[in-house]
Length: 176
Length: 149
Image (cartoon, rainbow over the protein chains, first blue to last red):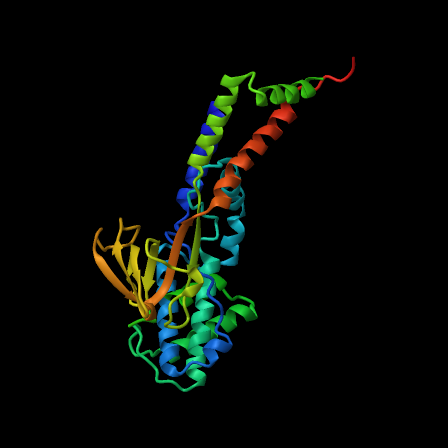
């Protein structure tokens, strides 16, 4: 019995250590820009972009990353195991991370960021430089919007994992 | 019936005839409550530059803040002001760099994320109840029930 328990603990430890994302703070629900943000002037929109980018940066610092649909499917087994461990251990209130790797929350943050940049673009606000040489935030919006469109079109031969990796690489450099 | 007998012994213990057993049960429950002193975490990402009133922040609250300048800090609030909050940093959490005991002032306009943890009576009570119910369920499921004369 003891050896079986030890095996479960070891297996769970191995699965948990395989996860790179460990939330060090609770993340807020970041909504896509709505009517409130639509009423913002350019200065307030820039402010909202900065705040959202800061929250996204925290997620990235905690190891959150976008994963491909194939990777997500492969992690189902990890999810089941970690959920079982969570339920089995009443007093272990450690932030048990499921196999999502922070994909969902990071994706939501990306969508809010994009919706704010779209508003900036629509209102013809002044574009700001990014950490990508020769690329403004509005140009980055256009590029990422195209990546998102390709991801949603699901064209044959499209590597969704690659598109998401590229989106992350770009948005990581939004702030100069 | 054994099950009935178990319930009966419970009833007896409530009348004080099994005092030591009763004390140990209460002791276990107290330990469970102490171990499960739970907190509820609330977090917001303000969209404007006003005080995040939904959190009802007050002096004495322990909070964690991320500013739009990408600063991360844990602090205890000492004062809620009209446009900012003042506090003293506490033991830094992961990825935080400010040392303990530093006076800080955070304008509401700079807050990108604020997390507050408070003691939650509901959660604290729920955990021991859950444990006791589960243990009771397991005990009932594994106790042999003898039916018949």
